[in-house]
Each structure stands twice: as C-alpha cells, then as structure tokens.
Length: 109
Image (cartoon, rainbow, N blue to C red; front, side, top):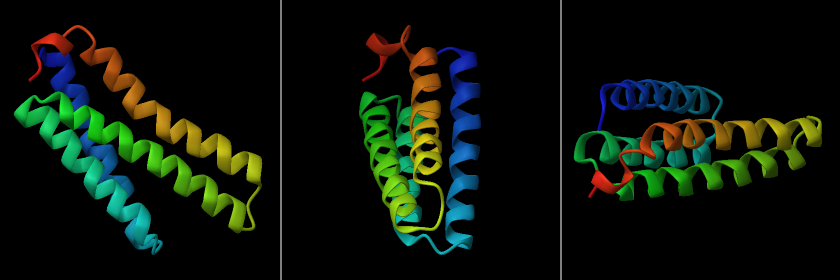
C-alpha cells in the first residue's frame, strides 16, 4: 500500500471517528453502532491490509445510507435533501478509498 493511500485511510479514519462522536452527541444510537463497525473496517484495511476491511466498510456505508434515508422520511426535514445527503455521505469515503486502493487491490490479503 503506497503512502498516499495510507494518508487517505488516516483521514477517513478521523472523519469516521468525528461522525461517530457527532452521532453519539445527537443520540443516534444505530448510526453510532454502524460508524463503530465502519471504523473497525477501516482499521482492518489500514493495519491488517485485508480486503475484508474495505468490504465491511462498504456494507456499513450502505446501512448508513438506509438509516439516513429512513430518518429523513420520519423527520421533519426535506425528504429529497435527506436522500441526497445520505447518498453523498455513503458514496464519498468508499469511492475515494477505492480510487486509492484500486492499484493495490491485488496486493491486499
């Protein structure tokens, strides 16, 4: 794994940790659980260099998208805005991570 990939994974780890703290602050227990599992996936990817970490992270982001949309449907917020924001949040980190990992994918365990 090259240096730029490691740097991005550290940035993603910090972003995910910040999101976890924010969700905990707002009392979003399900989102906190999903974010903690996503953090575990990022750690598996960064430290153990296993493909399973990326897959776990992607599953968590799909679940996060579904939770975000369901919270948008039940809340007072604009449904379209909730769907768009959940989609951006669910695609951004895994997408950027894939752009960094695609060259190193075969080298991961």
